[in-house]
Length: 126
Image (cartoon, rainbow, N blue to C red):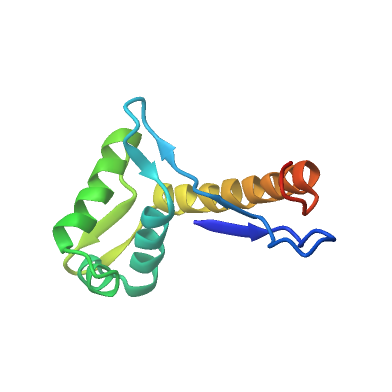
């Protein structure tokens, strides 16, 4: 979750904060991509292992694998390739999804900050 703060107003009121979450969901509001899936994909990319990813994220292997498979099913393509000899890595589609999510998040944060600043200008609502 992203949290951004506005400056305190001239009367010393506590700074206002904006907290937002970004999810890409399917038509039934099932999460396809969000911060958890981003972390899963980035960790798989670093470790080359779903098992290691699960351990580092304090999740079960089944939970990590289930999230990957749910995303793959909805997108209709593989995002993670597994092979006993080659190991585990992101597919081109997985890398593309991860990069598009990063760009989307960055642009959303910039726009949210602009709107928040414009609307509140560091002042508590009257």
